[in-house]
Image (cartoon, rainbow, N blue to C red; front, side):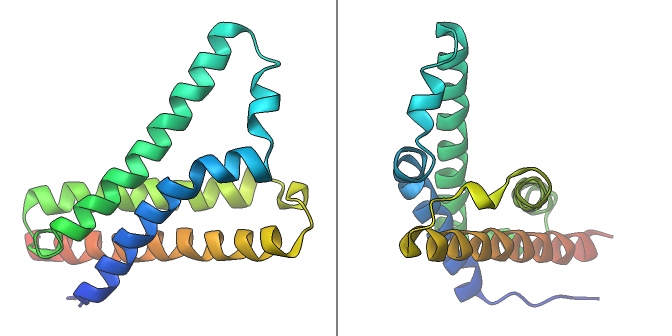
Length: 144
């Protein structure tokens, strides 16, 4: 079973991941009022929360750059391509699963821009999960 993933789809996924990294601070601040909640934590826990936020932002940006700069390499069916696409795919599958299972979307502000934005972001997350899981399967079939 060989899955064909067009380059434009990987590039779209890369651009989308970079977009999520760039929009992340705005979403935390305007949609979730995250900083107000974080201020209620003890100082060490505040720093831990901020650090994890930066990790998420950095991973999203890095995964996007990898997709943009190494598009062909992500499909070349090498062990490294398998590992990277597996990591990115698992990251986004985990994000989608966590979002569905644990994040109450009813707490999103009811302004139309935020409601539409939440649907668009979720569509992007599913796109990332599908594209990079498909790439992982493609790479796996080339190695087995």
